Image (cartoon, rainbow over all chains, first blue to last red; front, side, top):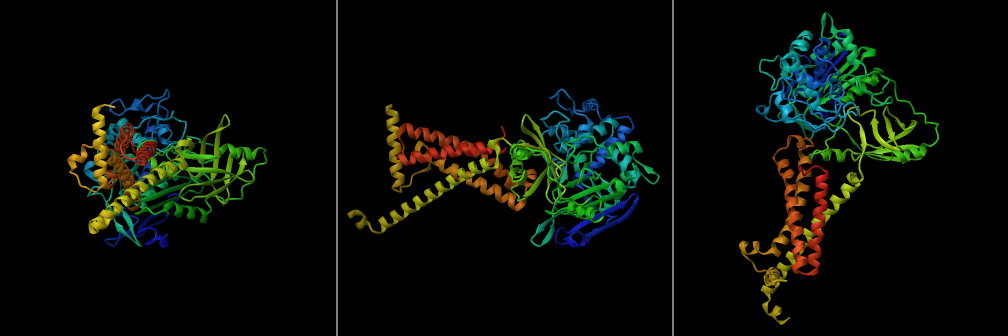
Length: 495
Length: 135
């Protein structure tokens, strides 16, 4: 970790726990590079982004345990006193189980309503009303990561207890666990213990402190916390709801939260409640990533090893905290090293590669608005290769090879990743990637493929450019000719 | 063809000849010339389209993908340009139709104007596909 300070990120905070015992809680580098303030694991709060959703869903389970909420009841039944409501687009209602597994089927906008000015922050109810999402899929069908869904879950908790979400989490989770340096409030109140790390942007070889931003859908990502506090939170989950004498969930509730609530495909990572599986689907590793504009974080639990890892950066490098988590997982053998996949012996492998070849886009990316560009740029191309193998590539240069181990299931050569295709009537319905638990890949229509879009846009821009160049050249030639005429009127007149 | 259209056509031809001769004209006189407006729409379509691509890519490269969410002023300006491109495409198309109907300019120029209109439609189609044009 220390090697990354100053090169990958200006500062980081780390917590590694074994059951109730923190093995390592340590701050690295600068909390504020401009002011040269060091990171303290027990005093410097980091914006943990979507890792905070784990607190939100813990609050949901706490309310389920109290009998106030039920995972399979229409969330609208808890919103009688609220102006927020989920439209009845489909016969099946949206439930808290859908919200905790991101299978409600809301259209994604990616944006949890980020604002630069704290004065622009609204109440959770107002935000959910203003940012109402359409339902584009029946609930329970596909995973499509949704900040709106997490915000709605937090609002349901607040409505069910007739308190604000922040008040409920404070009294039912933070206070019992002694998480005195944690808050969902924005901006962080002046009397809040601890200091908030500054976000940073890269400036050549160094980093500059930047202005912070605020997450209006607070249950989806406004948590600020120290590594020491996140260690207590991890220990509570590893201890089936309790740390020492302090209990936030009954053992049965904690076990229920850590069990599978949505199975995408047996061969890939699936969803526990609020947590997604990490790495090999058989490793029983669960976690969640998080990010704001200039912070990144990752939390991982290994219940079988009673181990927890939390890492946060006050920057957003391309190689984020997950890379550090990956190294720790490998170093401590929390999952088996990747093996060479054994090819399937069933006939028809080459035909199956032809069936699955195509271009795919992720379900959690927006289907409207300019953020659709992000969708276009992240399309996954699947191509057949020799010996019933597949090649995949993205525009970012992620090229990988895959071996079929079961019909329509392909394992990565030299990695843990898995592709699992669902086929209906001989065509791909959906593609699940093990390392993308937050969404499913769906086939892209021909007219939305990168080649078509790039070709049309490229042709149009080239045509416009050539026209401008032609006009410019013609105008310059005309002016030059006029200039010559003005200079040599006799010559011009004799022609 | 009506007398009015013949008169308009003569005026357009005179304007084109005048433009080619390098004579300057007042903005008011030019702005009432349909052929001048048609060509201006084509030039504007080309310039604004390239300007949109350059500005959008520049903001993304300098300030990152999250500018699509935070939308600083340069990104807001970039995201407003697609609507202007639609208007200019319609203007260029109307100009092309008038040019063929009333024989503005040379054949080569009319073909060029028509190609610009078609490129404009193709560009707008992809802008819509990519979500830059909210309906």
